[in-house]
Image (cartoon, rainbow, N blue to C red):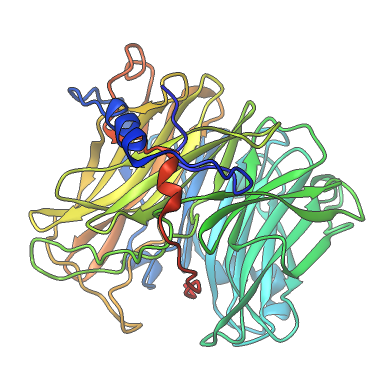
Length: 477
C-alpha cells in the first residue's frame, strides 16, 4: 500500500483526521528481523589518523578499491580491508596549494563513477571568507595512480561550507551553503555544474563550468543526484527549504549555458521540529546535526532516493523519500524508527531491482551509539527491521573542541558497481569516550529481499500536511 506522507504544495486537498488515522493504522506492521549477510567489515581511519572532530564524510568503492575521505586524511583499501595508501588531505590536494593559501582542507567527499571508470573528489579550503571549492578527478580507475585537481572560487564575500558532490552522465555537480564568514550567518546556497566531458577529457579541465551563486532556486545544502548509469543532459537537485523538500533541475548541464530552475516543492510535516540531542548510557548528549539532506541523493532507474533526520517531537527518526524522475511524483516514502533510540546521520543508496539500504546511527539511555542499517524495497514500500552493523564499545562519548559535542556528518551508503546486491556502508562509532572511529562494512541484500519483511515503520497520511510549519535557518556545519 502506498500512502504518500507528503503532498505537492499545489494539491490543496486535505484528508480528515479520521481518514488520516485509519490510513496510518493500515500501514503499520511489524515482524521478525531478516538481516542481510555481512560480507566484509574492517576498521577505517579514526581520530588518531585524522586529527579532526568530526570526521566528515564517507567513501566509495570501485574497481576493487575502497576509498575513504575524512577531515585530515584520505585512505585507500582493498576490498578485504588491506590499507594500500594513506595521505593527509593537504598532500592529496597539493596540486592546488597556491589557490588555497596554505589553509586547511575540510568536508571531503569521494564518488566512483562506473560510467567513466574514474573517481571524483571534492572539499573546501578554510579561509574565513572567499575560500575555495576543490574538485579532483583520478587519472585512471586506480585511485593510487593520482588525481588531477582544480579550484573554484566561492561566491564573492562568502564562506562556502558543506560542499556536496554528485556525478551523472551529464555533469559533476557541487553544492555549497554560503555564509557571511566562517563564523558568520547563512546567506544562501550555490551550485557549480561542470560538464563531465571536460573533467574526463585527455587533458582534464573545468571547461564550461556554470556557476549559480546564491541561487534562489535551491534550498539549504543542495544535493545533486548521483546517477551511475545516467545518460541524459540534466541534473536533479534536492534540498530543504522552510517546511518543504525542494526539487530543482540544471538543464543543459553537459555544456555551456546551463540553467537552474526550481521544479517542485513537497510538504513534510516533521521537517522543522528541532532535533533532540541523542543521549548515551553515560548520560552525555551529542550533536544530532539538523534536518538537511546531508549524505547525498541517488538515482537508480527512474527513482530518486534521499533521506534525512527529522523529529516527531519525542524522538529523532529517519525520513526517506523516493521520487519519480520523469514526472516528479512521490513513488513512496516513510519514517524509520527504533524503540528507545534517537536515529541520526542517515545515508541511502539503491540498485536497479528497487532494493534500497539506509544506514544510520542510533543511541539511547540504554544503548551505546550504534551503527545500523535497514534493507528496504520499492516494490512493497517497506523496510525490514533495522539491524546493527557495529556497536560502539564506549558508552559516554564526549569530544567538544568546538563548544558542542560534535558527531557526524559521517555516513555513506553505496552500491558495489560489480554486484548490485552488495551495498557498502561507511559509518562512525565511539571508539573511546573521547575518540571516534569508523567502520566499513559490505553486506549482501540477496537473502534479505528473497521474502520481503514487514515494515518497521509507519507511512503517514497526507493529512499531516496541515500541521504548522516554522522556517528555521540552517546552521553552519
